[in-house]
Length: 329
Image (cartoon, rainbow, N blue to C red; front, side):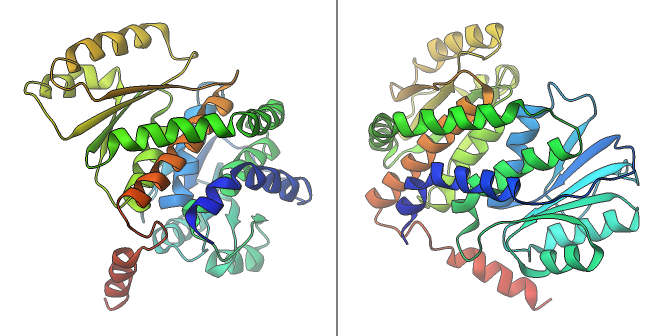
């Protein structure tokens, strides 16, 4: 399969994830859960970042995400640790999991196999197993969705997410042609440019996903920043005319009102130095819908850019080289 096949099947992945979760029996815990740590990197880890953005404002306990070998000092027997590795062999996630095991944490797993599945089976951890053998970033829809089901199982969130996912699937299917059209137009504006992605606070994970997809699929560098934080630093960097930067604002009706005003003012400042500025407004009535809309549009944009750049969107030779060198240590 080519990367566009995976992107084209995004809503089918969401449906598949819901079916898998509904048919997975998770056992209850007797522990009192006081905080949550989501462990994962790359195409698996970004789901934890976005879920944190969506869930934390309403959650009654702290939720954190780690993308490293280490774990925060607060992790203990009352921490719910969700280890998320598509391959099941991500060494950083396995290292973090081992430390959480030593602290007696409540552990749940999302994976397709590998060492992580073996650890979950050996220790009788709650686990959701998703389809194997595909590029992890292309299976985002599965791992992302399952995180909500696990958080609901442990009573961190209520069941309202289910309707929001159903509405998101209907929305993305209905808007598919328009999303692809917008993505192609955006790709043309970003071709032979360095993308600069700006979002309001609450959607940084979505910006990171877009950046990662441009990195991995399009084989391009780019950067992102968040409003209002960038108003206190990066905005000052816009001082000279630039011909190789393409600015993208991912915007939402639900963005905090003051941040909407800040973004409008930002555009006034930045437009003095580049005319290559694009605004993409999400559709939908929930943060889940808004996020998945931007994610799907960003994924399509990265695919179109890979075609324009004449590169293989799936190829990750340099990452494989890195892993090979690390294996020698």
